[in-house]
Image (cartoon, rainbow, N blue to C red):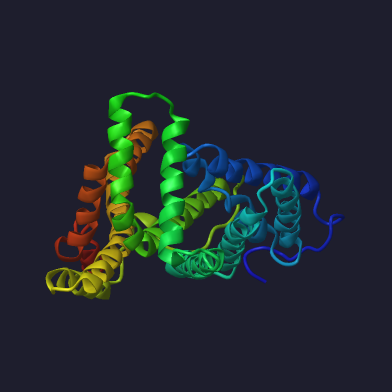
Amino acid sequence: MGLFSQNNGFDRNPGLGMEIAVGTTATLISFLAILLIPVAGVVAGVLTPLPTLLSLYRRGRPVGYWGPGVTVLAGVLLLLVLGMPQIVPYFCLLLSMGVLMGLGMRRQWSIEKTIGVPTLFVFVVGAFLFWLAAGDSETGFAGFVEEDLRNSIRAAMQQYGGEGEEKKVLEQSLQNMVPFLVKLLPGAAVSTTLLAAWFNVVAARRYCRMARLPFPVWGQWLEWKAPDHLIWGVIAAGVMLLVPGKTLTVVGLNLLLILATVYLFQGLAILGFYFERWKMPRAMRLLSYGIVLLQQFATMAVILLGLFDLWCDFRRLTRKPAESP
């Protein structure tokens, strides 16, 4: 039965119609931000799966499917009107991510499984969709992705206007990096999807607190830590970077990108742990998290904080059982 009682139909669910309308509107606005606002729109677009997640988590099956069902129909119609039928599969893929997370939370999956399973699903299906799209390309899959990335860079640079020399130099520098970025695309895709899943679960947790809804029993988030055996992945990736061979180097870099994201979560948990202990105001916490996620040196520092927590135990978690009466 999950955390909630199962209800069926609109008659037993007052307010369901309004909930669906709000959820559908929020989903479409969030997704359109990705398409219409280069770079900055991605931030808003990250929360595209959230209304679907909340619908499945709150309502369960089958009522919870009404929300994403209506959203799919509205989204497909809107994308067809806008002349973007090729985007429909990716829109549906983001909604399926919300479905998996919502059902996982309702079934009391662990937090690792709730975030990991949708991430793996989106990556595998998304890679397959890209492969299908590149099927007719004369340059093959890699060439197709490279050209798509170059077009995205041009669109982003045009969006922010200006014709100065600095803009031209920046655009040329980004274009020169494209072949290297394409090689890192698998790791970057997994890392980005992990971050998106994490943001949606954090937002869902915040919503449940405000709406006084029960939440999965995951323990204290501020005490979360990555499994200890993941350090062997970091060591393996480091060895790949040292061994001669371009293929091993690329594999090692992609693996490091993924593991760095996991240790970023651990580092953020450590920061949150001390923010809570120091009673830091909420505005200061949000500002600090924003700096960590947007400033690359701060991000790297927090990743290293999470990594070295394996040995340093900054929160003294391993001493807790001995100290309890």
